[in-house]
Length: 283
Image (cartoon, rainbow, N blue to C red; front, side, top):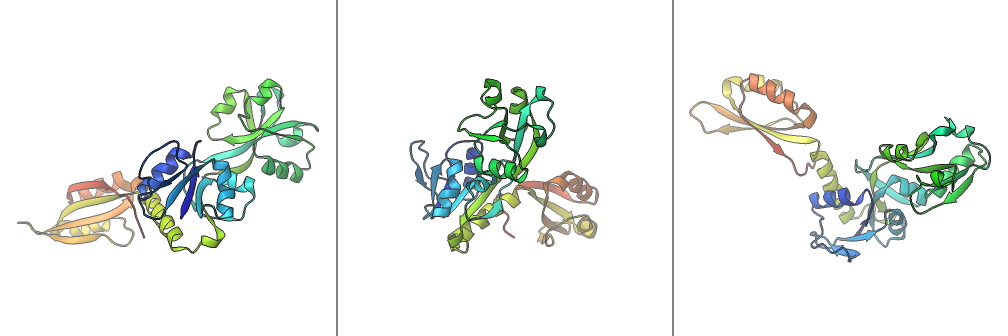
């Protein structure tokens, strides 16, 4: 089983970190190697350009892949997006020079030259709007093209908008919202190893939003502490050997609630409170 992953670009490092946390990190590091076994026997990582991953997964050369939703849409391939991985968030935007005073796509005249790597998405956009523009396919940085006089506008990925502003551009239309996705060849959607990878990755993603809260609670305070605890399916409670009747209470909670919950259980009588990171959370 092979997972195609970005060999470069904005998604590479976070993709490798996620796979490592899920138990599918590489057994060695070699920037020259394009196929590297993972720590899980029978699953290899294939390092390729992120824009090529949709095609590679559709062909079955790799059964799974991680790449941007924008690349999947641009490729127009028949694959299954089985997980939104929650990083690499960006927008595919139409951007124009600030000094033009343009506020919407229809204000750009016939013959406008638009530089982009996303030719298929761009063509669909201008056809749907009945715009008479010229698409200029590029492979490098789009932001520099208007400044060079090679294009009048661009359609490109923007995460924060900083790069656009540095080049005197502003976004006037959002064509697509994107993020990193786990994609699967349609013939392997129900494969056991695909389900394994999906489940382990999903467990890491869920765990990142949770913390394990552990505490000792005197028996006299147990009812009050339990009443203020949020819980997925009820806290775990076990008897503590102590001179005073005591219970250990363990619960997984959302990180956003952590500080408030700690103060509530402390004021309700909990003591020896521990906060522990969760590596994976499998429902």
